[in-house]
Image 1 (cartoon, one colour):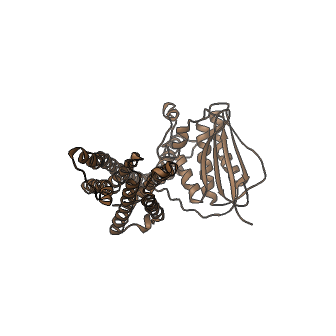
Image 2 (cartoon, rainbow, N blue to C red):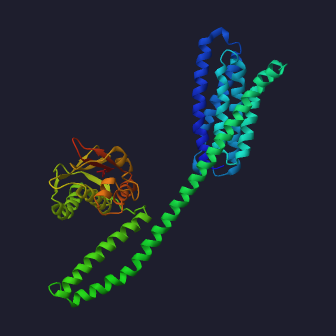
Length: 407
């Protein structure tokens, strides 16, 4: 059983705890009708102790030992089972809804234990213990078939639930494994493709440079070579984008940097593309804000955001860049446009690798869907955040926060 599944089990414990609290409050309102107050109190304390233990379990780094993980799961399940059994003894027949608590261990075990048979058997035994505890305490056993059916109904129900949930859990795990395999194949493809494309491009670019030295751009051959050079540059940029997609752990060298200077340089570099699309890019002048960041990384992030804003803006639109010091610890940079905007789902998915909005696909707007992914990687490498927000009345605001330079 992996640490991840144990953590799922631990978080699920909170649902049982909430149900126990509700039943305990119901018992308090019932007053004298509840005769097993001590058993109820002990049961609530056991479930509470299991919940606290679940919350205190170590995370991924401390749960690598399979044996320890299984022991922790068994201890939690056993404590819950005993607690539920005591509560059921105290609350029956006044609050028969307490029987539903027996379902919780079945659900957790189905998702927490990879071996389906072991999970089903354990959950069923847990239900048997919960069912038989009131009879053992009272030393009273069923005297006719009808009473035995009443006793066995809960374990049978839990058995059926465990089987159904176990099948669902197995399919879910299979789907997760298939997804993990597909992601690994994609990563390997990106690494291989970027390497295989970059290798032959190096001599092509070198020989092209030699030819351009012999044939200046004003000659007929030189003009043809200039067109070829433009295509090679585009191909190099796209290979670089694929390479960056394969490695989203950018190396940064942070130091005090002026957002006014970096943003101004990015805006100047983007004005050519903006002019071709009839889009106005302007800087909203304000007091400078000093970030503690890698200048090249921040410049790349701003350039990617500007590129998206320009590509998705129609002629006559305006894109603005502004910055401000939020406080002594954080500076903020905003790129806003008054284009068509994005739906909430598009904004939430915009930072996924290779995600392209329907507008990008329908409008045949170029790109791999990697620009904003690179932005997030760069910003998060600095310990900052990046968000896309709705601009009113229309458009999108990209809000970037970075650590402020101190002193």
